[in-house]
Image 1: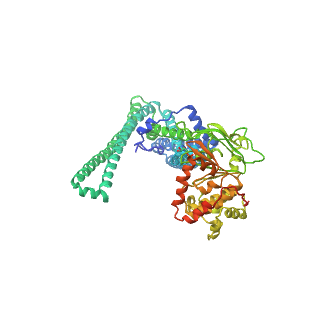
Image 2: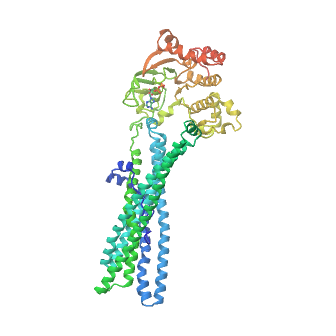
Image 3: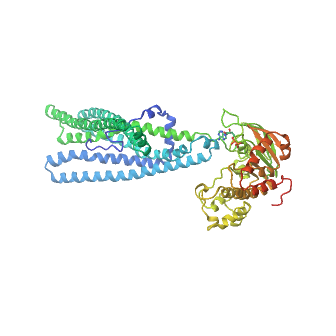
Length: 636
Ligand code: ADP
């Protein structure tokens, strides 16, 4: 270690900080716009930043003071044999050192405070932004990536502020102060010293680079050795080795890798050792040169330099190595920091796809008529998913959508609450294009029970209140009763306060479905959409769900993506979707008589579902016992 360095946390003289090939290839473009944007996050904290800057300047100054005081101790104390002066300067030196450390504490505190507040702002901004992202964003981006942006990328910003930025500042300031002090003492000696500093840092970097590449190489060999161990020391690996008589071969393979590793390890240790030789030599050359040049000036040119002055210069020189070295290495941190910001900003720049129109309206009254007019839609350019979809759902009526899996049924219903927007054509709600209706209002009026019911980790009560925060206990019980799940909830020890577990995993599929139906009943939308689960539930669960949704289908405006005949029969109209178009439409009877896709579906899918059930009698009775929804419903 060079004497008395003040460099901060930038990896020390060894550096060890070099960009990987990948980082080199993906270097961010640092434009003024990018910098401006980065600094815009610092701006709200400009007062605190000024305070940090003052702290850094003062503490750098104080930490250099002892080096300057050394001169006074030598010249005014020791040389003049002035004991009082000696004590004075010793005490002064100790006090400024202490002050420098205390100010350092304050600086760390303010710095951390700023960093925490900036990341707090960024996280909130990012979370709000992500909440506004469309369904498309969440289906196309990996959830892990999204969470990484929110957590570790933004965390990285914290260390950029507490370490990279403050290191640049404090090292530059230390250097500037040290240089000014040196030049004020003697410009010739200052020059001599300053020329030496870069000469010292070059071998430092070289040695660091060499060691870094050796570390990388030995890491690879280490992986190789571990790979061999994992493969050959596992039960099945050993069996293979034994049965093929490969013991000797495997031993030799292991021995070779092992030998390569020790070679590398020795080289790595020696690279560090040579580096220390270079370092010690250079750090001692600097002071020697100053002594030499100082001696020449004093002895040959009669300069008024004192022993103290020369000591001050030597001491200050010692304080310059670390900051210079850190600043030379800072480029790597700088590039990484900028890459971090670029990644975060890339996310911020993803446009909000589904947003409120500036002239969005909030209708006073709602009926619940939904019309699809020549709707075309695709998730991406490669494939058109919906082609010329036209249908009308009148308020109070219900439509069942049937069709093969992947034909576009869910896509059709997703367009109603604007999870996606149409490519062309339009979806209207009470005659107004849904894109012109206030988004929050629209989504309030449309209730969806999706195929994969999602409950938040919490109690049944909390999950219900999510739909209607001001629901009373009585409201909740009524909804649960309608959803045919109250008996279950009531039977639980904790009733409404029963925990549903992560994603509702503590409940069965059928129970989850019915709780989510209760949630929709509480939400009380104008249009109900049921995306029926394809996975078979047991017949009793099915019946309970059917009993819960039947009254809704019959009394409310609803769309059902149906897989079970019983649900289909309850609807007023059936749309048969195939390859993104409505291939057939009509009532069950009409469609059956057509001998088309519906009939085919009926014969393969619906009747099969009945045969597959082992509780045949109950389900069959139920399925076939339900009459087409002609009879008026008298539930509500
Ligand atoms: P269904 O509900 O009839 O089973 P979907 O509406 O879910 O069909 O899907 C229709 C087509 O759109 C399928 O080919 C499916 O692969 C595709 N698809 C569905 N969701 C997405 C998505 N988020 N991104 C891209 N393609 C999708």
